[in-house]
Image (tube, rainbow, N blue to C red):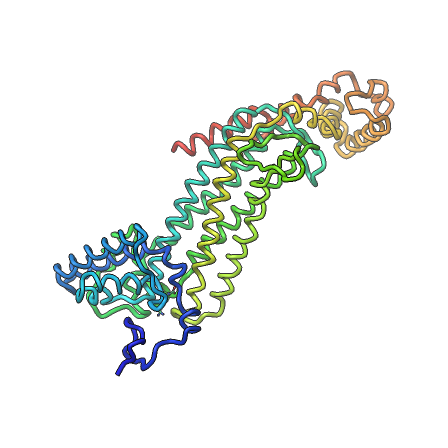
Amino acid sequence: MTDQSSNQMWGGRFAAGPDAIMEAINASIGFDKRMAAQDIAGSRAHAAMLAATGVITDNDAEAIREGLLTVLSEIEGGTFQFSTALEDIHMNVEARLKEIIGEPAGRLHTGRSRNDQVATDFKLWVRDQLDAAESGLLALIRALLSQAEAGADWVMPGFTHLQTAQPVTWGHHMMAYVEMFGRDLSRVRDARVRMNESPLGSAALAGTSFPIDREMTASALGFDRPTANSLDAVSDRDFALEFLSVASICAMHLSRFAEELVIWSSAQFRFVTLSDRFSTGSSIMPQKKNPDAAELIRAKVGRIFGANTALMMVMKGLPLAYSKDMQEDKEQVFDAADNWMLALAAMEGMVKDMSANRESLAAAAGSGFSTATDLADWLVRVLKVPFRDAHHVTGTLVAMAENRGCDLPDLTLEDMQGVHAGITEDIFSVLGVENSVSSRMSYGGTAPAQVRAQVARWKEVLAG
Ligand code: ARG
């Protein structure tokens, strides 16, 4: 006799129900209920296919279809009673289906296992998130393009080692992030293509003896084709790992940009003003306006990359095929996805609302001898001085200016000629920052004309 408390879905061979601790460690319903819509979509496709192949009757399939729609509306309406004893979303849905339609519910699981079911549901869920990430990235890229277009010729200091290096344009700096998020976008799209194969019908691990049509369920669920090896299909979580690694790289990009915004919005830099909508105040210091959104975005990479590492460690060393270890995949991915989408949306909001302080950018652009390279290049171009010698002459002039506490353009022609006799008045024409940036016309360079060309190219890419 089976104990009353043994599991109604698999308790046939059990004399007693699980210990409370066993139930607690085993249950995933607390989190996998987020895949309810995907689970029901998968079951609907499976039932329709079972009827089409004659495995179940059309009447049963119709009852299952109607019943699943009722379950879905109960879940969406918040009236569904989730049960920990029923472990996961798959068994919660099926048990409720049985309450609603009776016997035909028991035929739904023909030619299927929770192993291919969970792989299918989770893939569908991750695929939805890749689509959401694509929209989020596109919106962010558009916001950056507007910034770049508005300030294609605004000069600002460019940095290496966070020390003033050479003047660049605001538009160029914005477009650097367009390139980064553009690569993230292409990684998102690549990952989606690679993952888009249906595990459904792989059953527990070996496939099934029922005459199922895997092409049919694959196409009903928007997959390109069924997976080609049932052992692999039920034990593969590469799609989740790929999602997390794409998310990690993107979160790292977001973090770098967030860091720049934190620095740029400080009183010492004043390069940008973040909007009140994306800043917070201090409860004690009335003057404060803190870039909290940027700081939180800067931090998000921690948990997202953490999820990537955690799932990699869960999967490491698992023998084929399914093992329960793999139930530990979802919380990591759910948390990473939520935070990635939030970070993308917050960054888009900040970029849309922020204003660059053109005057502060320009004032800083010329500081720190930022046109020293232009001076050296002039010596090479006009006087045919070898670059290494030109570098040395320029260094001497920089040291002279530094001693006097002035900038390079403030030195006199006599000062310059004292270091290199061939220098003429013409050299002053390259010491201005505007001139410096507009001379950098090499492809991908910072010249406003190059920046505008890249903005135009990206607009075409996005429109195409
Ligand atoms: N809740 C399980 C998971 O998330 C579903 C698959 C369980 N399969 C099994 N044979 N116990 O991985």
